[in-house]
Length: 236
Image 1 (spheres, rainbow, N blue to C red):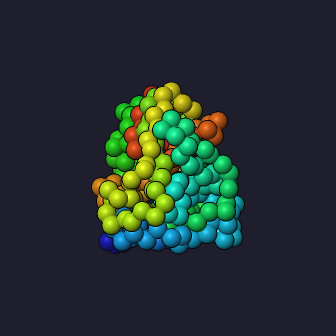
Image 2 (tube, rainbow, N blue to C red):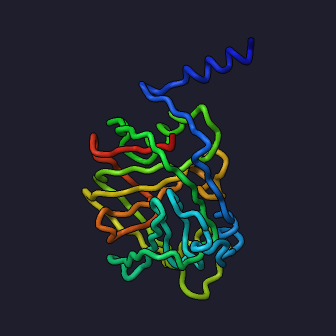
């Protein structure tokens, strides 16, 4: 009887009019750990991206080996970004890269949700995802498409031969880029159980952003959504 009551309770969980469940078609794979890079200086590649055999419906993100750039996989296409100057970066499509830590997953069927108007920044998004996915404790990939009113992304650019013993060391050479009123695609991974593994210690999310014209791509530090112009996609 208690078992049946629990099932009824789980079925009734909701946030607004949205319910969420995660099926076996979606999965998340973690290689390496952010904390090992930031605190132990493990900069060498733990995964060669072109060795991921199944690239269909693949999504992923992480830094390039040696903290020399960023990686973002969107539905099987792998984009890498590199610093050229304080105002310019280079973005190329390329699987011939390694990452010291990486998270990737598969999603072949999405539930599309118009982002509520009260979700305007990253903290709001994190809280919203926590509510709509409270019935699962598994990590998952998600994506966003639409217009970013404002955004700040960075590309790591560690000097050759630099030694990393703490997060400050790891961010030497990093360059931040500002975006305004841009059409973007965001790929993110959410987990309550992977802080300092593939998310920072103070968040459950790790997100990378690419502009629609593929001219800019990087790790998301700040993001302000344009009301009514952003779609959220969760794996069914």
